[in-house]
Every structure is written in structure tokens, then in C-alpha cells.
Image (tube, rainbow, N blue to C red):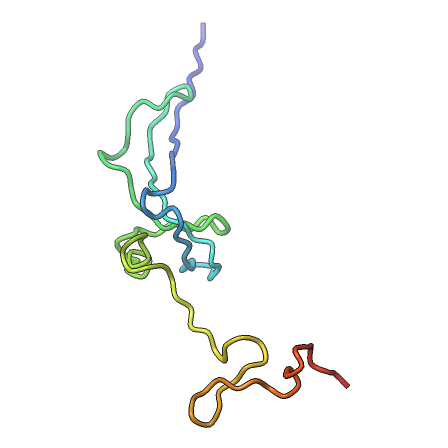
Amino acid sequence: MAFIFTCGTHTFSSLLKGYENVTAQCQNCGNFSARVYKRWEWFTFCFIPVIPFSLKPDKDVGCHICRFYQDLKHRPDVQNMMEGGGGGQQIPMQGGPQGWGQGQQGHQVQHPQYAQGGQPQYK
């Protein structure tokens, strides 16, 4: 008589509370698709989670494209983006809306080919 048992590990993950709307740049592949996850690895016996490998879940910044995970404590840029803790990521805009530029004294001026509100004329 032979018995076959299946053993292994399984990582349960979910978005970390408070960081649901935060998207950051992956430190591995450079894509802006990294999210903050709560991950907890368990030992499984016959596909049933039995014993956790740690007492608390890990808090990681993970990319779903390249599957790279990094501990949240090593990412102060992501910690600063936390909801209610100073706003989201701010990307500097250059030149304002399409067709606008900087005047001599820093005032916004519109480019002449956009003055009638149309698209630029290409020759």
C-alpha cells in the first residue's frame, strides 16, 4: 500500500491597506506598475495551508510584469505616497498645455500656430 502526499509552499498576497491607489516605478524593469502588497508564505499539506513561515506578513512593493518584490522599508519614495500622507506621486510638467511656452518674464504665452485653436500646420 502506498500513500502519496503533496507538500509545498503557497504565498498569499493582497494589496496593503492604505496603499491601494499607489502605483510606483519598479526598481528592476523600470515600468510604472509596482503596487504595495501584503504577502504571507505558508507551508501547505495536500493544498491546505498549515503553518505560516513567519509570524507577520511581509510588506513588499511588487511588479506584476517582472515578478520583482522589494521590502517596503527600502522604498521611502513609496512610503511618502501613502494615501493621506502627503499626496500622490508628482510628476513635473514642462511647458504647460500643448502649444504653450514660457514668455520672456515667465508668463505663459501661446504659440502662434495654435492661436486659432487648431492643430499645427505641417508642410
